[in-house]
Image 1 (cartoon, rainbow, N blue to C red):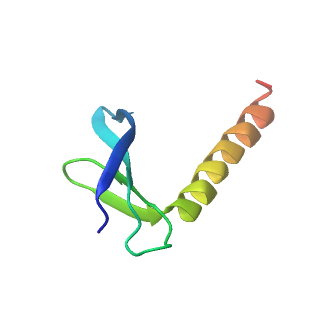
Image 2 (tube, rainbow, N blue to C red):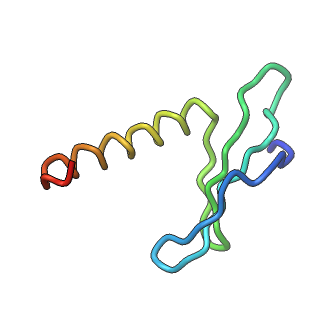
Amino acid sequence: MGEKLKVLSKGKLKNVDIEVELNKPDFEGGLHTIHIQNEEFRMDMDELEFLKLSTGILDAKKKLLKLKGDI
């Protein structure tokens, strides 16, 4: 596992604290690693996977709001 560079974000999900952190790549020339974690759970992905997940969530939110007529 890479060394933690910085915490990108902190928040709550269903009243549980979560943290998103950026880590150094596992090897020279590799992609950075992103951890979404709390005391009981950790999701580990590279930065490309994180961007895909994030844009998918934002796109889903936009579609839901459009269906509801909120946009």
